[in-house]
Every structure is written in C-alpha cells, then in structure tokens.
Length: 149
Length: 153
Image (cartoon, rainbow over all chains, first blue to last red; front, side, top):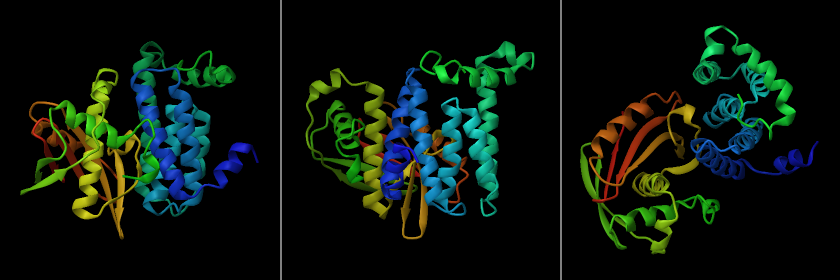
C-alpha cells in the first residue's frame, strides 16, 4: 500500500465527496485555460472517484456516479489504459445499472471523438489507435508531453 | 454551503457576494424568484467583500461560481436539498443533491446582464440529458435584477 493509498483509506465518503468536488472544479478551470496542469488535476479526480467507488455500492446513485467518474476522469487525464482497467472492473459488477454501463461506453466514444477533432489527419487515415501506443511510451515523461494526446 | 468548502480558493460564498456587489447591490437585497409557474421572493444577505477583488478575479468565474453559491443556497433553503458532491461535465449537471430518499441533479448558470430566460431553457435542455435516476432542476441567477429562475425539464 502506498502512502497515498493509506491516506485515502482513512477518508470517509463525506470527506471524499468534498475533495472530489473541489478537484473537479479545479480541473475544469485548468482545462478551460488549457493549462499543462490539467492532466494532473484530472488524475487527482480519478484517485478520489476510484476510492469513492470502492466505498459505495454499484447500484446506488453515488456509487454509479463515482464509477463513471473514475473512468471519465482517467480519460480526461489522458490515462486511457487506466480508464480501460477501471471500466473493465466496474462493468464486471452484476449490480451496475444498464444506464451507468451506457455512460461508460459513451465516455470512451466521446474521448475518441475528442481525439478525432484534435488529430483530424490521424482520424481520417484510421490511425488514432497509434496515439494510445505513443501515449503509453511517453507516459513516463508526462511533464514533458503533458497535453499531447 | 458545505462547511469544508469554506476558505477554499473556490469560495462560493465570496464569489456570490462579489457577483451581487458587481451588479450594484448592497447586502441585504430581495431577489425575485420564479420557480416553474410560482412567483415569490428571497432575501439574500452576505458578508461584504473587498471590491478591489473584482479587478483581479476572472469575471466569468465570478458569474459562474457566484451563481452556484446563490443556487445551492436557494435549493437548500427552499426545499431542504443538501449538497452531496459536484458532478463531472459528462453527467450533464453540475451538482448532485439529496434530501431524505430523494436525489436531485442540479444544473446552474449565471447571467451578469441581459435576458436570463433563454439561458434557463438551455440549461433545462442540458439537465434533461442527465441519465441519473434523479429529479432534475435548472437554476439561472440573473445578477442585475437580481432574480432566481428555476424550472425542471
């Protein structure tokens, strides 16, 4: 267990609700200004959402919000492998409602559409998947290529 | 207002006060309320803020976060809704609130000047797209009057 994990494990759902609310607003503002810090901000949102998902039931509204939120925050941070890992985990939960499953599928679709708008030439030639591989290779240098894809 | 949100850079109460002061209002002020087809009034009172902040803070943020301050206070005082958490944009609503066994998806916007009714219709359409199994409400704050406009899709 990392230090971050142990700190998060000590937080209540109410405390995490507060932290995720602040983190989302901060990430939105950084996104609007196209700040290089936006990826880190969305990563922080992902961490809180993931912890909230662990504390809540998939069939309840807060649990459904946190699960979809963890996936969408990972996508917003450009962490698509994490998004896929989380989606796989949550979609395997039997009690996860159909509407929330659709929300996760929609998040991936919207991420692809966003990428296609950003890289129209790659999208036209069907090469968007290459971005994921490139992103994985450069992910250890996120502060050098923070908003690349 | 959630007690843990006080003092944070996103200080909703401060932004609400600044948005009202920017529009020329002094505390306290009576706001007109139109919730669906019902009309009423609401008394707004706030700790006065240093007006020089208006010169250094982003005007759009004052309007947006100020509207959230007034809207959340209205939702709580008028119907007992309590903030649960902020929602990400993909949920087509800004806030999730609860009251006993009920849930509310709330979409908020603010208008510094001009016609707020078109904005309310936009926000009703937006929150109608929210797929959560919750009630839905759009609130627009018109700071120049000031008015609180609320309606469900």
